[in-house]
Amino acid sequence: MININLKERYEKMALLTFKGGIHPYEGKELTKDIPAKRLLPQEEVVIPVAQHIGAPAKPVVEVGQRVLKGQLIAEAGGFVSANIHSSVSGTVKKIEKRLVPNGSKVLSIIIENDGQYEEFVYEATPAPWTKEAIRDAVKDCGVVGLGGACFPTHVKLTPKDDSAIEYVIVNAAECEPYITADYRRLKEQPQEVIEGLKIMLSLFENARGVFAVENNKPDIIEHLKELTKDEDRITVAALKTKYPQGSERHIISAITGRKINSKMLPSDAGCIVDNVDTVYNVYQAVKYHKPLTERIMTVSGDGVKNPGNFIVSFGMSHAQIVEEAGGLYDEIEKVLSGGPMMGQAMFTLDVPVIKGSSALLAFKVDEVAHAKQTNCLNCGKCAQVCPEGLICAKIAQAADADDMELFVKMHGMECIECGTCNYNCPANRNITQSVRTMKRKVQAERRKG
Image (cartoon, rainbow, N blue to C red; front, side, top):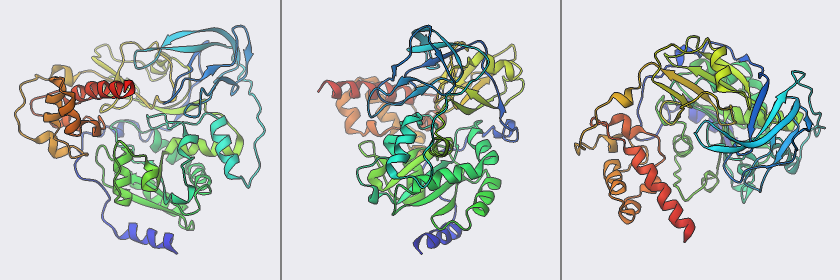
């Protein structure tokens, strides 16, 4: 069978990877061996209605109404949108704009937690599931990509042509330093993730499933191989440990040799790519009709007293989670939501956990802030590591000069904003920020056009 041949091919091949990239300090030893600990929210949860790419969800509850854990509180605002569910039982106190981790204010539903966690009971559809039942369950349960992009999963699982999908890739690279949430999920619930992949494969009759795991997780690679040895349609591929190996474009390139660009979707290359925790929650949605109301989150960095992994409910305050991790040391210069490469700096911990909250990192020293920036040396070191093969410094210069035409001509829109250029720049230029700003300008102009 073709899929058995695929198993043999991955076994014989060297570590899969892509051209470019970097290998920063991993930092995973701080938390990888610490099991995920469940935390319960305090008196109040703040649940934003926009926790995903696409249209914000629309509130379907009113102030003063009692809601149950898992109950729908905001309905998807369109096809590219996602349902939002309560993570506690309690009373809706307010519906107003509140701060979220990226510093913006988003319409949020504030619920007073009654501490009972009484659950809203849904009727799950028994197996065998039709394609329609699978997609409906994933949509109903508000599953989105939990690797950071938060793209609604039911949309991703609904390509133009099911028969054109040849690979369903479980992105288990977890290439961002420090983060070990996916590692713990595969360590603690591997069979559920495998079952989630099998459910997804049932949507695509011509597809094979691939667990793509970086080789800094040898125990996970071997365990997954053992668990899937009798699964003809599933194989495990070892990837070279390198950032940004977990990027959708580059994991597709490493696994299949196929290329996609900013104008393409993974499905255009015959691929569906989903994060480990997303696949786990596909299983929960289809098997039990369990809405997405929690996730595993890593709290780490040298500024955290007791780094660890936590199962956190959406709407919980980051301040509470930090407290559960022993608090922060007095001398802290930087706190991030997400990883050190693509995460966002936080100016307050009084913001809620959302679906995209993969990690909270705290550092005693902000190395970027202390680095002295000088003029570009024209050394080309940024281009050497760019996973998209871009001449990063020249694109950033076009951006800084507000030369939109040149920026687009030099393929600036292909930048994935991974930060490898910044990391490798001896002049400490903030190339990524310049490119990111110009990309937003180009996108705004295109929307006007």
